[in-house]
Length: 155
Image (tube, rainbow, N blue to C red; front, side, top):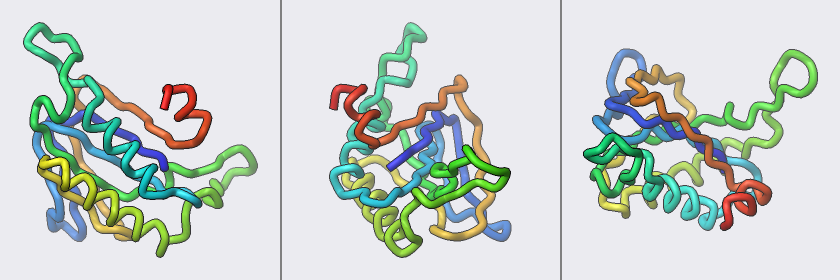
């Protein structure tokens, strides 16, 4: 599982000009699902993103987590996080999970995020979405559950 986190002042998702999800201060979470991703991968990512100390305290130091500030989450499915551009000019997406598998994992991810008590909004899986945001900082962080990423992170 791969996520691209963007610390935002606000973010929204529109489909055909209609807002389907929007948040204020918090995280825009772009979520990519790979073959073999499990509930444990979801839980790892959610624990990490809700507890990362990437929000500023009163002294301007990144010392507070999303939970600390009671921030909001906007979760958007994005299989293109698994684009492999090593060969040729057209990206390959063979590492991304099949749509039906990815849809189920996306729904589980959003549901597990909701259990945190934070406001959670979402895009629409498989839809052509217009995502707008104001990246705060900017702060953009990639999280990945590949074994080498988890091992390098200490768990």
